[in-house]
Amino acid sequence: MVVTGLGVVSPNGLGTQGHWSASRVGKSAIGPLTRFDATPYPAKLAGEISGFAAEEHLPSRLMPQTDQVTRLSLVAADWALADAGVNPAELPAFDMGVITASSAGGFEFSQNELKSLWSKGGEYVSAYQSFAWFYAVNTGQISIRNGMKGPSGVVVTDQAGGLDAVAQARRQIRKGTSLVVAGAVDALLCSWGWVGLGTSGRLSTEEEPSRAYLPFDDRAAGHVPGEGGALLILESADSAHARGAEVYGEIAGYAATFDGREPGLRKAVELALADAGLAASDVDVVFADGAAEPELDRIEAEALVEVFGERGVPVTAPKTMTGRLYAGGAALDLATAFLAMEEGLIPPTVHTEPAERYGLDLVVSQPRAADVRTALVLARGHGGFNSAMVVRS
Image (cartoon, rainbow, N blue to C red; front, top):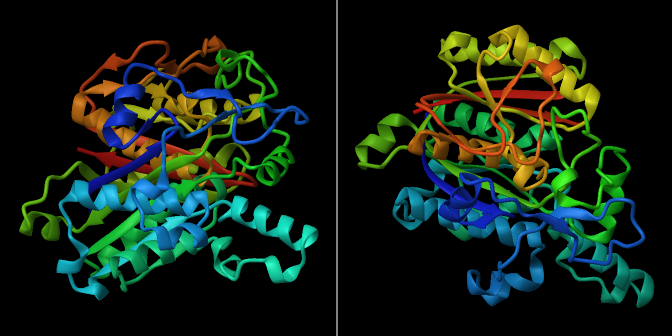
């Protein structure tokens, strides 16, 4: 299965090239929250998307029925299809599917409707609330907009979701579906969503952006949330070659486990490498989950050292430039991995001073030129979800 199109909506750059231009030089988008007044809350920083005007990309009829997350998803899908050179109207409807991941659905839409319910009454609640909040709403709206009637669905595995959605798409393509739009976009930057995120106890309360999100650093004290993600166009290699499509690379291996303790993540890595038919020495870079919570960082670092050896492979966590995007984060890492392969450049983990005790060759401060042909992308969801995906050029 190959990737023929990328659609990126990221805090540090809209569009694939906007995101890569920023990421390749270490440009961070983490800063003070502006979407609402965060003064009363312990955490005050986020990776916000700026410069996005949905009405410039979508018809006006969609505005009253969609949340920010769905608008971002629809535009990311449009960009991914255009990048792949695909016109859905020219393809059989039942040969195309949509599989996305979500952590929360349309949270801000729901918040606004709840305000109307309690301040004005039930007759002021939008009928669109019945689906605008739903985890599967992005899949539904993308499929309707593009006439895609093949195997579709949604995956809810928190921050592992972006990889799990792509893996589910891979299964459907192996069963005969020609094309699947897959990946994830998340957006929870509203006051209700902020309260929910804060219950994890894992948000950084640092108010200086350059000290807020520091995975594998002795100063690590939580992560910074962000919004955005990526959608990918996945096709069988035969289908892509038949239409002369440009190919970013291949989804070569995948595995998932459910165990938040030490063996779980390592086992997922080993199984993904086995699925790809590769040895650890074949991997050129690891895109780490990078939780920036000491115990979780320890578990991830030990898993990588056990598989690759101490400082055995370059490791990066470019999400330090965007914040953790929940379901969207792993999908964005996946897109970034393909862009890194294309240029031969590993984007940096910004602001971090890696602790020697972790034993990682962490790419920090500046990008690193490298012959990147195979990458391992890791993601973990709250409660024990572990996912590992191997991609190659």
